[in-house]
Length: 369
Ligand SMILES: Nc1nc2c(ncn2[C@@H]2O[C@H](COP(=O)(O)OP(=O)(O)OP(=O)(O)O)[C@@H](O)[C@H]2O)c(=O)[nH]1
Ligand SMILES: [Mg+2]
Image (tube, rainbow, N blue to C red):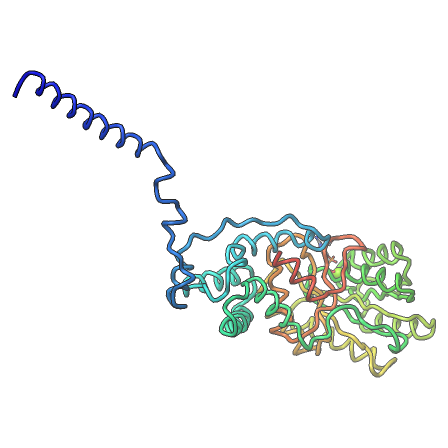
């Protein structure tokens, strides 16, 4: 091989090696030639259903966004709504058929923590799961909304129809101490008066110092009539006088504000039964309505309480108060479905206008976002 030929070989080698290095570097620098994330995720739509379920379940959930409250009710129920959505929100947009067993368990846990209660949680999950089999494409949120609203089916919730009711209509307000009975009586007076009805308030809590004065202030604030005895007077006698006065004065509605605390719970139930017996001497069908006030911040603890009142007094409705400051609003679902009692009103604050007739649809909408 001559000198020239060696040079030619060296040149050819240099061109080949240089070209190879150039190509290698170029390849590294071209991100578009890397497989795209889309290409990494296999197309699951073409797979059989079982595999699809697993593959969808393996996908990371989208981040949970708690939407800003839109309606006034959403704003008042913000704590309940926030805590439910924080736990359940990541499932809401998903297709119900795509949830794994672990995810269903997570949903169950979230409902229990939201104070929906063991029995109602299992009723809800049964309903939702039975719908899943019908069509696996329905969004989880829609199924829960439907199932939750369904818990109130057959219950005559919301404000009382006042047309054709007896005169006076006697409503007894009962509940343990501090749940908001007196405040609710005041708010109810404002509610009925704004609907053109005359109202008389009876201070039948003569046990607690200050209770009579508290109701008197409410009666003045909302412009309702007021009847009471002296402190320590017999609550039965006060109620008798109030219903008698209501009848003779021709008022539309008499509201009885009763005590929440006595020496024992048995004493309390006996006193309430006695009040109800005594007003029957004036109007045999009275008290026409017996509404239990429960404190919404107590969550599931109020269910047992409500059962005891119901078995002693045959309640006709429930009012849940203080829902404005609690994350336990989910308990409203089980109060209705466990007790099979209509929720009449909900309390959303301390002033007269913070009482709303309860309506299942808007309530469920407000807590599920
Ligand atoms: N945030 C809020 N507070 C409420 C609500 N309803 C009542 N309250 C407050 O709860 C406290 C107790 O209310 P009361 O009406 O005195 O309760 P009660 O059941 O009559 O109490 P006793 O007569 O002692 O048995 C008061 O400070 C009320 O202002 C509500 O819906 N929301
Ligand atoms: Mg009171």
